[in-house]
Length: 398
Image (cartoon, rainbow, N blue to C red; front, top):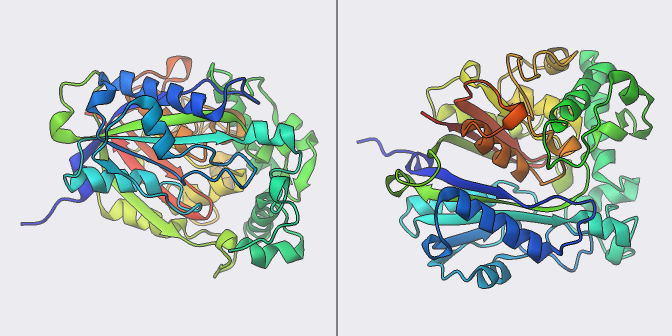
């Protein structure tokens, strides 16, 4: 008898997000508790029901950049949890690692309801030190840089923007893509964010506004880069057999995929016009009978807009080199398009939740709670996460 993939045994039953600030008057732990309480309440559960907790990537308070200020231990104590399972911290590149870890813990029988959260306080860090987003900046200015970035920093790649600009340059050169095409992603994000009360940037922009914005690292412009925020997102994952009587209709995890690679871990092989995310896409579609054409709405990672193009191709929504033409003008990725995309405003406009905001938005769409930005009859949603460690989920409701 063929064994079911572990994700088939698990569903999402709750989702919550704190109020978002740039910066927030609340500290990181307050934001975490707020998001977790909202997620548990949305599932119709109590804290006594939560028997597992994990986060990505674990507390990194010494970095000084606000990228991960809160860990699972202090969160579970502040929530009054008594879990039977606490996840291990995941490496910084594995954005969806905590989610996959929770799925495995539930499927193996260690727990029934796992709270997964992701908290950032990068806006506060930037307010304290303008170079907090620079590699080797902030409180660690002048400190030794280790890992993949140690290979790029000597060449003045001081920010992930410099690294991703290399991918954009290669993609433009090989496929003839244009800035106006890339800009359609940013314009669409603002259009969606205008309909999201919790988004940071809600004022719409035009393609002319995009073209007039300053270059950050050629060819990437200001609006191609995600925005630092203070906020937290939390999700409740449950074993499917105990989820039927909860408040929300269970969101089924149809498939998952993961891979690793890229500049930021010090290794790249290829021509810089694709990502190791292709392997995550291949894994995802190998675990389901659904196809890209069955997806009603997509939440595609947009730490930088060039990553969105590459993810669209990695997940099979476009052929190689076709994503720029696919998004051009924005009609195909708008609310009434063939693939409504990043309906919260994404990281470019709603705020940088390291992709966890995308999963939160997927839940809202599949529960029909998207408000003015709700996609009609949304039953299947693809979510992708990461620009160096790559994760993807295919979610659906009946």
